[in-house]
Length: 272
Ligand SMILES: NC(=O)c1ccc[n+]([C@@H]2O[C@H](COP(=O)([O-])OP(=O)(O)OC[C@H]3O[C@@H](n4cnc5c(N)ncnc54)[C@H](OP(=O)(O)O)[C@@H]3O)[C@@H](O)[C@H]2O)c1
Figure 1 (cartoon, rainbow, N blue to C red):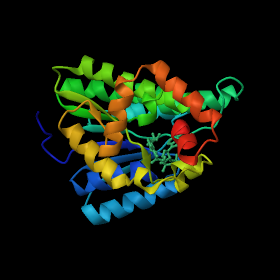
Figure 2 (figure 1 turned 90 degrees about the vertical axis):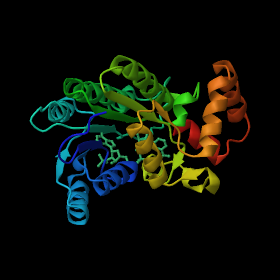
Figure 3 (figure 1 turned 180 degrees about the horizontal axis):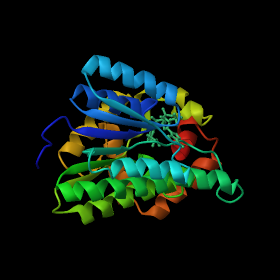
């Protein structure tokens, strides 16, 4: 695969915290310039300054709420700007939501859908168009092992969409020099669980991954052109088991799990 002549540029959504900030730091250290996207402009500005000083990266800050169509369109327009090509898109922004699909507030579910699904579709398409024209580039979508969990709530449904979308995108990109990868992390130590009001931080310590480990593995798999990246052996084993179990068996396990007193880990994995 061709590499760009100068420093490559990566656009990372959800770069103000957690995995997104870790992607930004790893990519800057590896010689990328960056476009950082999130709602919190102050945090993005601080990160941009630090990465510029530490690694000599040129860092643009693009403040956007991906749930708002006009702001999402501005990010898509940046990806489509042929005069400032983006070589890697990391669709990372996301959050957990405790809302029943049956009786929850549909506005909250729609906003969740817009950030975790619609934005991933729109930005993948905007990035891929330019990358295909240039014959090179990578799209990395942040999914979750939760996306393999039949009956795992709205978050799992949206992460299931991200997995299926990436599989189909990769097929459409075959032979173009552009690759699509989806990473399926398990629990990662970020702000995710606290922001969603979950108790996950108290789960078993061996279940937890560090952002750096997820980022290192998924970037390696992205640049190798692999479709699915599952960081850490325990989650690779879980993904393999979930991949061969019938969906009815996974749904039955949820039913049993919710009848027993739900442990912290179980409850939070379902919502993660
Ligand atoms: N942590 C886990 O256990 C885990 C496991 C599997 C998958 N994931 C996935 O990993 C990704 C990153 O999550 P994280 O764990 O790093 O969580 P985090 O620390 O809470 O960071 C989430 C990021 O998403 C951004 N974001 C949220 N809503 C946004 C919106 N409407 N528009 C723009 N940006 C928005 C936040 O920035 P602002 O608030 O500044 O907008 C923040 O930068 C998510 O897709 C998540 O689903 C996480």
